Length: 201
Length: 201
DNA sequence: TAAAGGTAAGTGAGCGCTTAGATTCGGCTC
DNA sequence: GAGCCGAATCTAAGCGCTCACTTACCTTTA
Image (cartoon, rainbow over all chains, first blue to last red; front, top):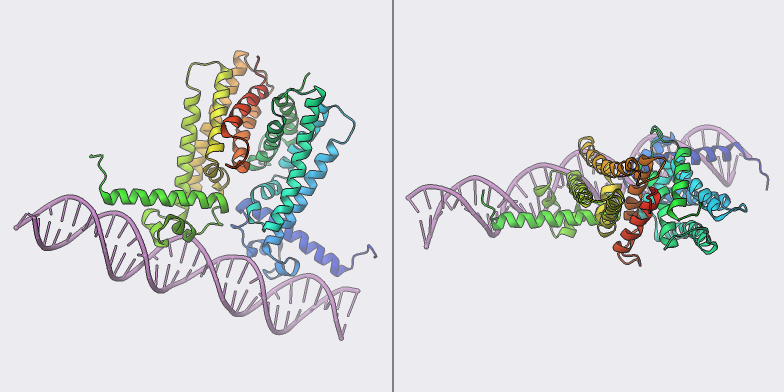
C-alpha cells in the first residue's frame, strides 16, 4: 500500500483534524451535551452535515477523542518509567509526566476525564480498560517502592489513587494564563508525590 | 413572625425539597445540559410546569444547589479548624472534613465542582467567591504552619491547592459501593496531607 | 465513470418555558 | 360557624426553537 496520500485523502484528513479539534474545544468549554453538532461544524469551518461524512455520530467524536487521549497518556507514563531507575525516580517521573499532560493538554484532559458519561456502554468499557492500565502503572510503582523498602506508606493503593487525583484535578482548574507553569507544577507535584509515599531521602 | 408553617407552606417546602434532590441526582448523573426539566419533574413526582412554580429557571435550580453546597463545605471546614490546636492538627482536621464531605456527598460534590459552567456570570461570581473563601482557609492553614516552623514545604500555595485537589477529585471517582469508606479515606488523606506539607513528627 | 467530500434543506423528536384553568387552603367578614 | 375570596400549588396543553441526524444533489478527484 503506497504511503502517498492523494489530495482527496489529504483533504479528508484535514477536515477530520479540524472537526476533532473543534469538538475538543467545545466539549471542554460546554460539555458534551452543551455542545451541538452545529457548534462543532461551524468552528471547523464546515456544514453540519459534514460531521456525518466523517463520523457516524456525535458520540463517535467523543469516543475518538477519549481513546486517543488515554493512549497518549498511557504511553507517556509507561515510557517515563521504563528506564533503569530507583523507585523514587520512577514515581517522580510518572507523576511529572502525568502532571505535564494534564496541565499542557488541560482542554483535552477535561474532556477525557469529565465527559465519559456520554459514551455508549461498549465505548465506556474500552476507555475504562485504558484507565485501569494507567492506574495499574502508578499502583505497581508505589507497591514496588514499598517492597524494596524505598517507600513507607500504610496503603500503597490509596497513595497511588491520590497521586492520580493530583494530575486529574489539575485539568479542572489549570489555565494557560495562570501564574504557575506546567513545568513548575510538575516539579512540585513530583516532589510532593515522594513525600506522600514516604520516600526515604 | 410565627414559626408555624401552614400546610400549604409545608407542601411547597416538600415540593421544593423533592425538586432539588431530583435535580442533584440528575445533574450528577447526566450533567446540567444532559438533564431536562421533564427529567427533574418526573423524578420529583411533579409535572414539568411545577418546576416553574418554585423556580424561575432550570439554571436557578443549579444555582441553589451550588450555593448551599459551598456554604455547607465552607462552614464545615472553618468549624473543623476553629479549636485551639497545632497547625498539624488543624490541617489534618480540615483535610479530613473536606474529604468526608466529598466522599459522603459525592453526588452533590460532582454537581458543585463540575457543572458550574452552566451558571450565569453573576451566579458564577458568587460561587467563585465562596470557593476562594474555602481555598483561603486551606492556604492560610498551610502558611501558618510554615511560619511556625511546624511545616516544611517550598511552596505553601501549591501545597494547599494539592490538598484541595485530593478532596475534589474524590467526588469524581467515589462510589458508595466501593471498598473504601469515607472515614478510611479521610484518615488516610489527612495523614498524606501532613506528609505533603512536610509536617515534623 | 465511480468515489469522496461537501452542502442546502429537511425530518421527527425533544427542549425550556408559558398559559389558562382546577383544586385546596386560609384569612377575613358576617 | 358559614361563606367568600384571594393565594398557593398543581396540571394539561401548548409555543417557538433547537436538536441529532438524513437525504438528494453538486463538484472535484482519480
